[in-house]
Length: 232
Image (tube, rainbow, N blue to C red; front, side):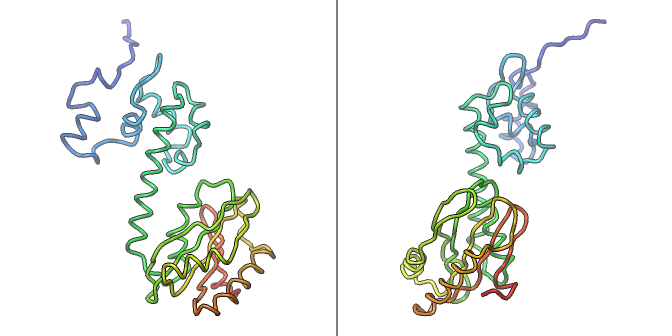
């Protein structure tokens, strides 16, 4: 018996089984991760369907979409059949999802503990290989007004100008601020410069009647809170 080894492409499927048609007819929740990724990829390459390419990517990260979302354009282009355009499409899709998630958290959160700050900020830092410094501006009732990036640095440090922090706070009439930056190395312990900067900002904030509630150092899955550790 001779087996048919011809590749079956999405366009060869019965219409009711094609992911795009199924999503239109039955909703987006009916598609698997592989099918959704295949739709983003769009077309296959020689010897591989878009589904094959999507499955290959997911197999590499043990079907973990979060791990796939951290890949750069050039890392994605290492997969067979993935060129610059396909890689950018995938990056853009993940970035849109991240922004929606951040908005959903931002519009509802009221800060009661350091973990609330971590929940909001962790996705901003999740795939960074360099340090960034952010602030959360809060109302008198500890409701988020907005989040602001203050600086972008290198792999081990970033320069922070307190004047920029207080300019942002005064412009938006913030009553309190949460400071935050990441350590790409994963080491959450504050450096001496982290400690000195925090003290400097806390001292200056008192002149403007603004409270510095916390300074968070964030890695991918955990964080260090100056407030929780009695360092404020």
